[in-house]
Image (cartoon, rainbow, N blue to C red; front, side, top):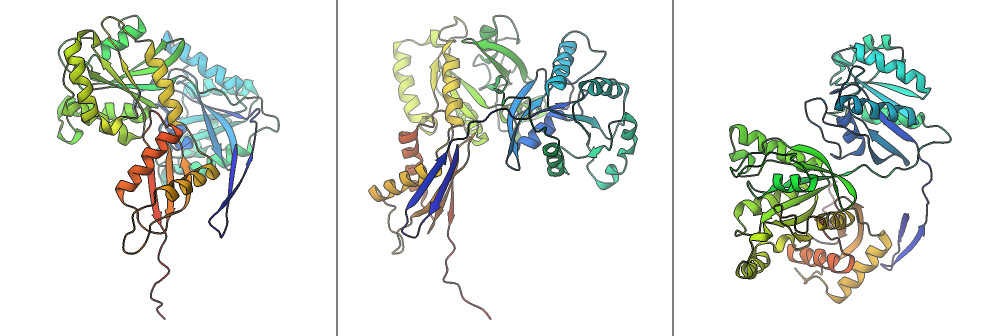
Amino acid sequence: MTDEATWTDDDGWSESDDVDERGPVPTVAVVGRPNVGKSTLVNRILGRRAAVVQDEPGVTRDRVAYDAEWAGREFSLVDTGGWDPDAEGMAKSIAMQAELAMRTADVIVFVVDSRVGPTDADEAAVRILRSTRKPVILVANKADSERQEAEVHELWSLGLGEPFPISALHGRNSGDLLDKIIWAFPEQPTGQLKERGPRKVALVGRPNVGKSSLLNRIAGEDRAVVDNVAGTTVDPVDSVVEIDGEDWILVDTAGLRKRVKFASGTEYYASLRTEAAVEAAEVALVMLDASEPISEQDQRVLTQVTESGRAMVLAFNKWDLVDEDRRYYLEKEIDRELGQVSWAPRVNVSAMTGRAVEKIARSLREALEGWGQRISTGELNKWISDLQAATPHPVRANKAPKVIYATQAAAEPPRFILFTNAPFEKQYLKFIQRKLREDFGFVGTPIELVVKPRESRKKDKRK
């Protein structure tokens, strides 16, 4: 859908919407041996942390497709696990997925570590790449400076042409690389704009609320260590699980006790990894202990997830321990303590008995739908014009602040930019935000409103 809105002098809007049915689009596969920075490059191209990145091999295990765009061209970007010709066990299945991505892509981005130079594994991958007869772009990653760029000449020996030096971490030459990828697209792409891979869910909450127990219940086996001692889980653990007939990537994380700057030792690093897991996820399943009062630690977790811009679902665990009296007080606590996240879907579960666990998927889908929701520019401006006519901003300094133009700049999470004739009060912005939810939904997602007041034209003219 293409939204076109035209500003007119009488503060009106005209809009024309053209339906663009997206057919086959080019597929770009990012491949290479483990730990060369493939997922970092994927995130750089997407402009957000979609792929999980850690400084250890084997974090990405499956082919995961993302919708991407550059210079008006849409394409499907496929992140793959590290390819190793001598892989065994799980690593062998990861390598097979990477090989399949190589053979089905329209363009292959072959990533190597410029600091290491060509390896035996790289040369083995080249043999497969040549057999695909697809355009291959040799990317020399981790070239963080001009001096390091000059040292990539060894990679000519791979026989794939000139190595293209970049720094995926810092963005060096990434735009030029994208131009090169676009130029390599075939006239008739074979790929279809693929459904994205399993959605990533960060399982977060304060210690001992039952995160690992819930993961094990969903998986139907012991994927995570469970103990009554708080803090059993230290590192995030990725698991592909099925909930309500759909695969999800569920990341069990360490319980957040303190703010990172106040944590120390193992707890400090566990907190950092948990933050990274939330950033890498699309939706956070925030677990709370329904049998205990909502705590300051719970509030801290909710604030962290909201500030991360991720979709959110609240899971009240240990519901089997909630009696009528506790239920009465819990409802009052929710009204009092969780008003700032009243938009998050809520599900009452028991990891111990399995109560309502299958309902989690429905809430996750609902939250992700709200997270990716968009409003056309024309519809948004008509809506905000009607809203201001019915409930205008209070007059301040003999002036009535007004939205001149509004647009939704992004989704995941929804971000709106309001161009105004004067600064807006926070209370009125909260009013706009509340009405957006009432009229359009945006269930399960934070909403960001950015106000850009028009600069005054009454400026002193200096000669």
